[in-house]
Length: 542
Picture 1 (cartoon, rainbow, N blue to C red):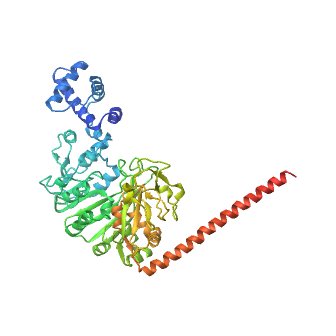
Picture 2 (cartoon, rainbow, N blue to C red):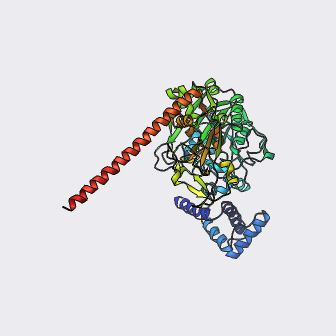
Picture 3 (cartoon, helix red, strand yellow):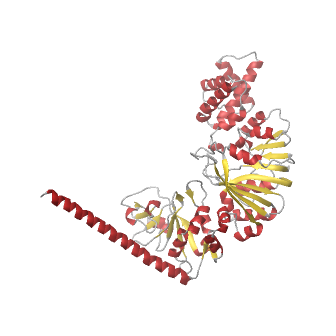
């Protein structure tokens, strides 16, 4: 049995990585049916006979031939049919085709899902079951008392999942999309889902949901399919916890109409196919009361690049928040919840705050396609941000008509910060006497100087609380990725203008003293080195 399994894994790895994922799956189905047909006709024939049989079956199924040549077909045919039976679920689990939107769920996440099965759990919905492969069948077998509906929106996965559960009377596979309203006419005790991350949004014609993002639409749709006392366990991008606009409306809908039971932050790298930071949400029918807040980390981890390591997940921290506190906070930001006992955060929450977008213009820099050392436009990039100042001498240039970059031209007192990268740095732009723009890797914050001073804003964003707010607004995992739209909705303290001017002026004085001290120290160092080198040379001539 182990020898057969090793052989199957080598076949899946060889062909699953060289053929288009959908073609590989179609090919496996056609090979399986071809083998059955040839047995009915009295046993295996030669390569040409097998190929012609496959073509007839493909035509009957209205399936396009996925093989580039008879030779490729026959090679995979012989490889697959060396085994007694094709392990269909292992085949699905071997795919790494991002074009099909396939995100593989790690065993540690399966364990989190398992914890939500109860003695009274009878009717279970598993959405986009292909993502649970190769652990789906074992999950179903672990709780045989349940009746399962497993959905997929791809015909090829529908065919494969039917083969996986052939003969299982408690499992029904359904071809249906969770991103379409009323995709099922049933209600469930337990729903498990890992919907699509990122990518394009639903079209306006599909707009029947509060939010057009795929994952958010799935959340709203699935809540409608809960039984009384039913539970939805769903993994979504962490931006659900802090983003504004339609995402905020969806949060408020969930909070008011359902029982938000748990938010659990998952570690970066838990899904190898995406760098998006994710959370597991547990939502039930009823009214929100106390909400359990958890953070998971990796057990023993040498590398996060390939998903969850053998050590699995460990609970790194947990707390709870009451509904009233959640309403006062205004979002589901986990970092804020854990920091609520922190003295600095308590001061932050006690201050008058405004959304940054209400007192400043916030926009992304411009994409620079062609660089020209002699170009008329200077470009500030992440590498030019030095924390306190901008390295104007190190800027790149581009040649472009100024009217085409008019909306991106930097002004005095613009605050710049990275939109992506590994380090958070902020710097204030000073006019240079020539046209400068920011690259697309930077976000520009242009304060309304009658209400907000750039130096004060920099001081706040560079503070521990400001840094935590920026970190919590990140969409990515290990690498920083901040949306300027989410940054506009960040709440900042707004003290009186007199206070802002006082701290800004003191900052400028101390910065000048610091810079002058550095220059003097560097000059003393250069002078001392030169003097010592001269003494060495003078000694050598005696």
